[in-house]
Image (tube, rainbow, N blue to C red; front, side):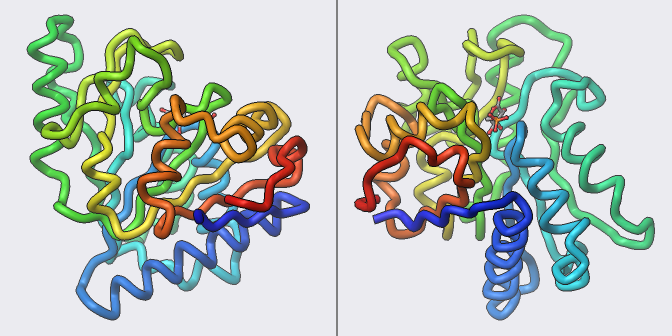
Length: 250
Ligand SMILES: O=C1O[C@H](COP(=O)(O)O)[C@@H](O)[C@H](O)[C@H]1O
């Protein structure tokens, strides 16, 4: 069973999400000198701002200088582009931290971004794989209205990403959601991580939450991840997103 927490209001979700992240940080720092975490793009980033920056009861407990921050997926665009997950995280979270705080952040190498050939895109993915540690302490994930997470999309056309067993970071091409070219963690990275945490909020996620939790449609990447890694998978959702879910059997 995966662990699902449903919150009536946003503030309680973001607070408990922050508590969860800080707990994972503290557990990691009891054993070693760093906390290795990956973040996703999309709506998760605003939730992270609320949890880790705006919530004063938590912000003082975040040991940013000991975090090593990676990206669960990234769009192949310049890091300053409005579509960049790194760019969004920097703008919404990192730029809001006091200037005295040092962060260790590992964005995609953008030097090959302008090249349109497949070799360059595969190289961007391979280079990101090189800087990834073997095991992340925590992988933070979103869930799109189509059931995608990272840039692992459902459907035959993108099955190659879910079937990837040797590359830990892969090039996702022809993404159904723009921009078309991305790099993404593959299942081996999620397998090696210590904990996986999804965040899903809002009524636009109602149908997909029903499909994931009631129908358990295993064509969806999110359902596959729930099945494969259930014991270390946590969902933070709000009441709106969970409005159609009937089951208690997660
Ligand atoms: O394109 C992406 O979408 C997903 C889901 O985003 P959301 O806004 O629906 O929460 C996100 O997790 C992923 O990192 C991003 O590249």
